[in-house]
Image (cartoon, rainbow, N blue to C red; front, side, top):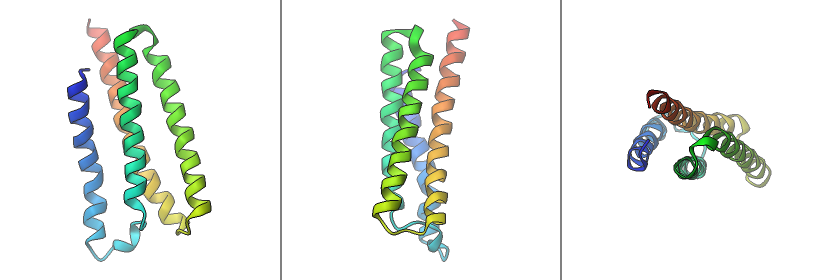
Length: 128
């Protein structure tokens, strides 16, 4: 997968993920959105972007270790997000249920993008 394509798809994904919470915050259901939602969104989306770009750079250097790089980067992202949650819940007073719902909304949609990128790359390898 080309780097330009990945960046365009990632920006499109970020807009699609951000649209429902933005609209929800402007409606009468604004209480469903954590006051720090955009911090959560920026952190996880930025981390996913860095992870995806680093995986693609390693894949261009050595295609044989693509799967190992993907797993390692995903584990680092998972652990970083867990520490972010821990820090956030300990240091900032938030409604735990709303925070966790907002966090997993962003985290899982970003994870879907990573898996989509993995499957697309593996499919392209099979076709070669």
